[in-house]
Length: 159
Image 1: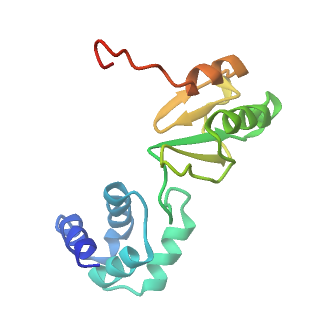
Image 2: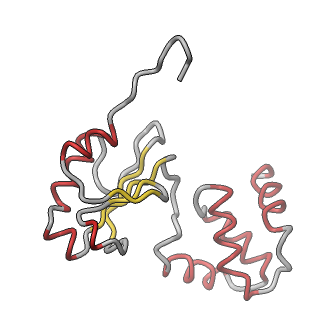
């Protein structure tokens, strides 16, 4: 717990401790720690001098905030109308098959987290996904296979 408090003190050192900084504080904590733990949110409430219920309320309202660890690669499959019509369910099933987890899960090796989302705003590219900040559109099973296939390491160059 002491190590986490020290890390949080460093994260919060760039803020003045005013309640209006709540969202940027939560964003920074998540950026640095990967997610918002209950302890981190309580510490933020104390730092900002606001009730913990306000912190939990704001954090749970916005989709951007996570409450459990996620993989290095967050795969978000668009399930908006355009993507749905063009095969989002097949895309989700194919990705799930390739990475070995179901929607809403994180792989044990912390490599991938798979999420379905309402819309990523790339309807012209339907069906589409994001892997972290990269958008991949007009997906087919072959393209999905290329995105998630393990590339062999070149032993001569270690690439």
